[in-house]
Image: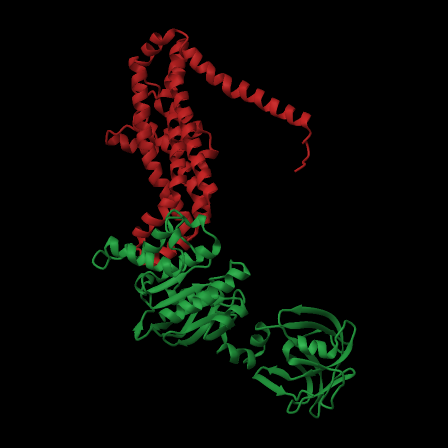
Amino acid sequence: MSIRISQIDKTYGTTRALAPIDLDIRDGELIGLLGPSGSGKTTLLRIVAGLEQADGGSIHFGEREVTQVHVRERRIGFVFQHYALFRHMSVFENVAFGLRALPRRQRPSNGEIRTRVMQLLEMVRLAAFAERFPAQLSGGQQQRVALARALALKPDVLLLDEPFGALDAKVRQELRRWLRHLHEELGFTSLFVTHDQEEALELSDRVVVMSNGRVEQIATPDTLYREPANRFVFEFLGDVNRLEGDVIEGRLTCGNASVSVPGVEPGRRELLLRPHEVHLAERAIPAAHLPVTVASIVPVGAEVRLELEADWLEEPWLASVSHAEFERLGITRGRRLFALPSRLHGFDAAGAQNVALPVG
Amino acid sequence: MIRIGDAPGVRRLLIGVALVLTALFLLLPLVAIFAQALMGGIDLYWQNLSDRYTLAAIGLTLLVTLLTVPINLVFGIFLAWLVTRFSFPGRRLLQTLIDIPFAVSPVVAGLVYLLLYGRNGWLGGWLDGYDIQIMFAWPGIVLVTIFVTCPFVARELIPLMQAQGAREEEAAVTLGASGWGGDLRVTLPALAHALLYGVILTNARAVGEFGAVSVVAGAIRGQTNTLPLQVEQLYQDYNTVGAFTSASLLALLALLTLAAKAALEWRAARRESLA
């Protein structure tokens, strides 16, 4: 079921929680709403669910307008941040709740309910826990019960509010992969809220980046990372290195460092780059003269993270290099090298400008 | 863990003092009540119990309790619901007002009701025109008892309902539960324990209330004497054994209440430890 959100806005007292927002979600898409706290992402999710009323605008599920439709009749599944399981009911009864709440005419028989619930519990791999109470389960298990409960009525749309926020890293990773599978298998349209960029990038078909009640960018994870629409998106999605200096005739100078930046307007400029866009070499090249000193070395998985210091930098840069590169250069602490940016990103009020640079 | 005052000597001293004080102030009086009541033997005890006026007092106390507890149960749920689920001007004030019956001396409460509902009072005069008597009759006793015991249920529920928040109810609604269906199946069962606890406390207080009731009852023997008033009247009549016989009934009820309370707490603790 596709979702069309148009001109939805919401104000609490004098605080604008959502500026008019437009968002089209295709049938079967998995969309992540990403933003810092207070960016309006949860408000938007709750408005889509019908738990909150928008001040204006409309929401369509497929061709059906649901703006004024009560939560009960929207056919959504909602997974709450802290699961919101019914504490006094067994896992089985939690999952069965929606089926038992159906009007008498549509309600399946007890036998059918049992079959359906056990099927769902099988799917979330909790069949053995049917008679347990929520308090007797771990956080990850509770979250899976919450998912099974939300899916019991075969909703058109599944909405998840920070679904993995309260879990530890390993469980979170596992559940993410599992949700992705489930999504592919069952094909429901799904919208989830998160403040964790890694989660959003890993799980979503498209990510909606929000801040201060507005949408900053809607894009696939890949595009988002490579071509951020503005500075907020760029900074929110990962570590950022800054380079500030004066641009004269296509060359940026800062103390004893300089780099050629073809196409950048003259004047005082700030350019940004990601740690993986910093390469290192023993010699400077004509296009880039950026002397740095290695201040710390931290091997993290497949790469080595370096902290680079220099007189011309206010804050040290982060660089991530491969182990092969690390060994080839024989990097040690205090080693003096030259940074070669493969790319620099400039942002102004109008949007983004990327400067591609040849790596020497 | 080592903490201040952990030396064995200090510990023994503190435990000793606590035990002596408990025995002196709590246990001894309790034993004394039953000892006094049974001083004249079991036959006299029964004779005192089956005294016409004592039986009437027991009946009136039961009537008052049976009326007060359900009324305050409903009222308490309603009030807790109101202040935890909705936001409206004056909500905070209302939350403070709930505690008035605890803050005010029961005697004062009784006097206020006497002023309002007495024959010369604002409402009493008007009701008198319809030949309805509130004061110095059982309706007055029920009224003040409701007043004195009305915070118990609400105060047990409010913190719990605040902690519970609206999430579980929202979950129920997203799963298609209608308002009342959701409440009956989701909200109330989760509150059952607190509710029962509130009822036990309300019950204990309704049975034992003296101050407010004594002002509005007018001490008409056999008509408006509740059990606590009967105790005091018998004692004034120098019928010590009779007074303690009635008192022993109240003490027995108190012990039952404590047992029920302990059982509930034990059950709650067991449920937590399962978690």
